[in-house]
Image: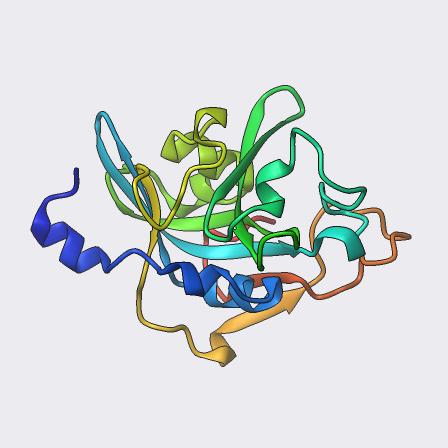
Length: 196
């Protein structure tokens, strides 16, 4: 557990109401927030500097585009849970579930800056697979409740001014895709924790 003094410094867990909103609003507001994983070796905390929004049924790039499956079920549930998945046979990725139950919205956490418990440069956290590896996030945290009871949480922090955030198309999508050019990626300008 994080000592009381560190808890105060890291801020309170974000409430369910933060996540139970439109996915794009949640994505934008996650920039600057603090992601914490309380591991057996101690807490690890990072400042989120890059995220991507995925809008469920209306978004061909979303894992929920074709409806609910065993893999994506948590995306259709209550907001404020963690959706983890494995890619390329080697990397875990994590998403924050947004929206109301039945509406599959998720925000991929792509990049961060180290704050606590990590002896790494921000470049080591630039990319969703690198971020999960550094924080020790795997499929065992699938469905973890970020609001209460789990070792993973997102903590409040001072809001980031709009001028400090850039919006771009998401990374790695087929340029011919219907949502490929949508500006659903949010990044903190000038951060070394932003993936290239």
